[in-house]
Image (cartoon, rainbow, N blue to C red):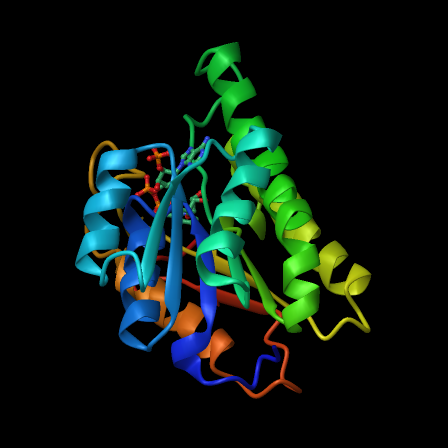
Length: 234
Ligand SMILES: NC(=O)c1ccc[n+]([C@@H]2O[C@H](COP(=O)([O-])OP(=O)(O)OC[C@H]3O[C@@H](n4cnc5c(N)ncnc54)[C@H](OP(=O)(O)O)[C@@H]3O)[C@@H](O)[C@H]2O)c1
């Protein structure tokens, strides 16, 4: 089916949907009529959200550790089994770390790189066949930190990799009809932060940007959306 199909038939898969930006985007997409596939590791939170968004006919909760290729393949298989198509995939799962190359543990670094970089790449790999069939839309959550380098921040390095991944995917998918959008949020008030920031964006502010990119006509490919809170300088 093509991306011109009625919105009520369209399906979006979102990783990192159990919280923050991913959960807010799932709510906005569902409100706009999309069927949603919600992926993350926290099954109970996903199931509660799937119930809120209309239950099995409209929303599917799938446990997936994005760093695990088997999980990613099963996630896409479950999406196709339930809904028969995939029109958009939002590779959004990720987490941060302390600034300073002597901070955090090596294990934290390993998990962060595997989640933020390999995890996003595996989501692309798992979803591209179905997205190509639908002439669909791929979105990735990078960051302001994927546009400017932050001192001692391996997190910033992972997000530069995601920024590069989005452009690499856009060029790779040229000719397939699949559009690619990088979402680059500034400080956003989500559980990403142990201490919640003041004067920050909200998850729903980012969700609206995702919906803007998704709602363009097929010939418009919104490649990047960089959004800071008005109060953020750097
Ligand atoms: N908040 C900000 O200021 C900000 C700014 C720029 C970019 N971002 C990016 O935005 C994205 C979403 O973050 P957020 O702010 O919404 O934070 P959040 O509320 O902590 O959400 C992070 C999401 O990622 C999921 N996740 C983490 N590791 C995972 C894994 N291995 N496999 C599957 N899911 C995993 C979490 O679910 P489970 O724990 O249930 O798996 C959760 O749903 C991240 O990529 C983050 O880097 C955030």
